[in-house]
Amino acid sequence: MDLRIMGVDSPLFSTLQQMMDLADDTEKSSFNAPTRTYLRDAKAMATTPADVKEYPTSYVFIIDMPGLKSGDIKVQVEDDNVLVISGERKRDEEKEGPKYVRMERRIGKFMRKFVLPENANTDAISAVCQDGVLTVTVEKLPPPEPKKPKTIEVKIA
View 1 (cartoon, rainbow, N blue to C red):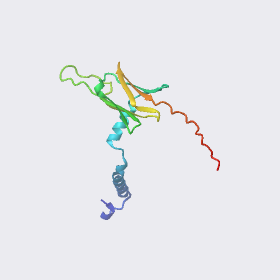
View 2 (cartoon, rainbow, N blue to C red; view 1 turned 45 degrees about the vertical axis):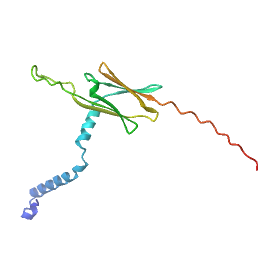
View 3 (cartoon, rainbow, N blue to C red; view 1 turned 60 degrees about the vertical axis):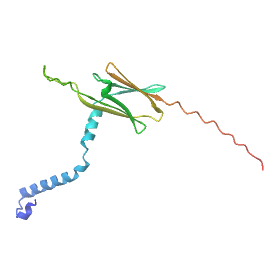
View 4 (cartoon, rainbow, N blue to C red; view 1 turned 90 degrees about the vertical axis):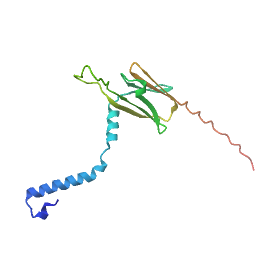
Protein backbone atom coordinates (compact mmCIF):
# COMPACT_ATOMS: atom_id res chain seq x y z
CA MET A 1 0.00 0.00 0.00
CA ASP A 2 1.43 3.37 -0.97
CA LEU A 3 0.61 6.07 1.57
CA ARG A 4 1.61 8.86 -0.85
CA ILE A 5 -1.45 8.12 -2.98
CA MET A 6 -3.65 9.02 -0.03
CA GLY A 7 -2.04 12.48 0.15
CA VAL A 8 -0.07 11.83 3.32
CA ASP A 9 3.48 13.21 2.91
CA SER A 10 4.67 13.63 6.49
CA PRO A 11 8.14 12.29 7.46
CA LEU A 12 6.55 9.74 9.77
CA PHE A 13 4.46 8.24 6.98
CA SER A 14 7.37 8.24 4.53
CA THR A 15 9.45 6.32 7.09
CA LEU A 16 6.62 3.82 7.51
CA GLN A 17 6.43 3.48 3.71
CA GLN A 18 10.17 2.73 3.53
CA MET A 19 9.83 0.09 6.25
CA MET A 20 6.95 -1.57 4.39
CA ASP A 21 8.94 -1.55 1.14
CA LEU A 22 11.92 -3.10 2.93
CA ALA A 23 9.70 -5.85 4.33
CA ASP A 24 8.44 -6.62 0.81
CA ASP A 25 12.01 -6.81 -0.51
CA THR A 26 13.00 -9.13 2.33
CA GLU A 27 10.13 -11.51 1.54
CA LYS A 28 11.11 -11.61 -2.13
CA SER A 29 14.75 -12.44 -1.38
CA SER A 30 13.96 -15.19 1.12
CA PHE A 31 14.54 -17.84 -1.55
CA ASN A 32 18.27 -17.53 -0.76
CA ALA A 33 17.69 -18.51 2.85
CA PRO A 34 18.92 -21.96 3.95
CA THR A 35 16.31 -24.71 4.03
CA ARG A 36 15.14 -26.40 7.21
CA THR A 37 16.83 -29.63 6.14
CA TYR A 38 20.14 -27.84 5.68
CA LEU A 39 19.88 -26.20 9.10
CA ARG A 40 18.92 -29.49 10.75
CA ASP A 41 21.87 -31.30 9.12
CA ALA A 42 24.29 -28.50 10.02
CA LYS A 43 23.17 -28.64 13.65
CA ALA A 44 23.45 -32.43 13.73
CA MET A 45 26.98 -32.26 12.31
CA ALA A 46 28.09 -29.52 14.71
CA THR A 47 26.96 -31.45 17.77
CA THR A 48 28.62 -34.77 16.89
CA PRO A 49 32.31 -34.64 17.82
CA ALA A 50 34.69 -37.20 16.33
CA ASP A 51 38.33 -38.23 16.50
CA VAL A 52 40.11 -39.32 13.32
CA LYS A 53 43.36 -41.29 13.42
CA GLU A 54 45.63 -42.33 10.57
CA TYR A 55 47.58 -45.56 10.82
CA PRO A 56 50.00 -46.98 8.23
CA THR A 57 47.28 -49.28 6.84
CA SER A 58 44.00 -47.57 7.77
CA TYR A 59 42.00 -44.53 8.87
CA VAL A 60 39.99 -44.85 12.10
CA PHE A 61 36.99 -42.65 13.01
CA ILE A 62 35.93 -42.67 16.69
CA ILE A 63 32.61 -41.21 17.85
CA ASP A 64 30.94 -41.46 21.27
CA MET A 65 27.47 -43.05 20.98
CA PRO A 66 26.35 -43.75 24.54
CA GLY A 67 23.10 -45.65 24.91
CA LEU A 68 22.60 -46.37 21.21
CA LYS A 69 21.85 -49.74 19.67
CA SER A 70 23.39 -50.83 16.39
CA GLY A 71 20.03 -50.34 14.69
CA ASP A 72 20.11 -46.63 15.61
CA ILE A 73 23.43 -46.03 13.80
CA LYS A 74 23.94 -45.94 10.03
CA VAL A 75 27.36 -45.95 8.29
CA GLN A 76 27.32 -45.25 4.54
CA VAL A 77 29.60 -44.17 1.70
CA GLU A 78 28.22 -41.52 -0.67
CA ASP A 79 29.70 -40.42 -3.99
CA ASP A 80 32.46 -43.06 -3.68
CA ASN A 81 34.51 -40.97 -1.25
CA VAL A 82 32.27 -39.48 1.48
CA LEU A 83 31.87 -41.44 4.70
CA VAL A 84 28.53 -40.62 6.37
CA ILE A 85 27.85 -41.65 9.97
CA SER A 86 24.30 -40.86 11.08
CA GLY A 87 21.49 -41.96 13.32
CA GLU A 88 19.05 -40.90 15.95
CA ARG A 89 18.97 -40.97 19.73
CA LYS A 90 15.38 -41.30 20.91
CA ARG A 91 13.88 -40.43 24.26
CA ASP A 92 12.51 -43.28 26.33
CA GLU A 93 8.73 -42.98 26.22
CA GLU A 94 7.31 -43.62 29.65
CA LYS A 95 3.53 -43.69 29.86
CA GLU A 96 3.26 -43.56 33.63
CA GLY A 97 5.66 -43.20 36.48
CA PRO A 98 8.31 -40.59 37.15
CA LYS A 99 8.39 -37.35 35.17
CA TYR A 100 11.55 -35.59 34.09
CA VAL A 101 12.68 -32.84 36.42
CA ARG A 102 15.70 -32.06 34.25
CA MET A 103 16.70 -33.44 30.87
CA GLU A 104 20.30 -32.71 29.84
CA ARG A 105 21.24 -35.65 27.64
CA ARG A 106 21.01 -34.82 23.96
CA ILE A 107 18.32 -36.50 21.86
CA GLY A 108 17.58 -36.24 18.18
CA LYS A 109 19.42 -36.84 14.94
CA PHE A 110 23.16 -36.79 14.55
CA MET A 111 25.36 -36.94 11.48
CA ARG A 112 28.97 -36.52 10.40
CA LYS A 113 30.42 -36.50 6.90
CA PHE A 114 34.07 -37.11 6.12
CA VAL A 115 35.68 -36.80 2.70
CA LEU A 116 37.92 -39.82 2.37
CA PRO A 117 41.39 -39.52 0.83
CA GLU A 118 42.15 -41.07 -2.55
CA ASN A 119 43.95 -44.04 -1.00
CA ALA A 120 40.92 -45.10 1.10
CA ASN A 121 39.50 -48.49 0.18
CA THR A 122 35.73 -47.93 0.34
CA ASP A 123 35.18 -51.67 -0.17
CA ALA A 124 37.01 -52.47 3.10
CA ILE A 125 35.11 -50.55 5.80
CA SER A 126 34.17 -52.01 9.17
CA ALA A 127 32.20 -50.52 12.06
CA VAL A 128 32.05 -51.71 15.67
CA CYS A 129 30.14 -50.11 18.55
CA GLN A 130 31.45 -51.19 21.95
CA ASP A 131 30.79 -49.61 25.35
CA GLY A 132 29.11 -46.61 23.71
CA VAL A 133 32.00 -45.84 21.34
CA LEU A 134 31.61 -46.31 17.58
CA THR A 135 34.84 -47.16 15.77
CA VAL A 136 34.77 -47.08 11.96
CA THR A 137 37.89 -48.41 10.24
CA VAL A 138 38.60 -47.64 6.59
CA GLU A 139 41.47 -49.66 5.15
CA LYS A 140 43.99 -47.98 2.86
CA LEU A 141 44.69 -49.12 -0.67
CA PRO A 142 48.21 -50.43 -1.21
CA PRO A 143 50.55 -47.82 -2.70
CA PRO A 144 50.87 -48.05 -6.48
CA GLU A 145 53.86 -49.89 -7.86
CA PRO A 146 56.54 -47.48 -9.04
CA LYS A 147 56.72 -47.52 -12.80
CA LYS A 148 59.89 -48.95 -14.22
CA PRO A 149 61.41 -47.10 -17.13
CA LYS A 150 60.55 -48.60 -20.45
CA THR A 151 63.45 -49.28 -22.78
CA ILE A 152 62.82 -48.73 -26.45
CA GLU A 153 65.05 -50.40 -29.00
CA VAL A 154 66.59 -48.04 -31.49
CA LYS A 155 66.75 -49.41 -35.02
CA ILE A 156 69.39 -48.29 -37.46
CA ALA A 157 67.99 -47.44 -40.86
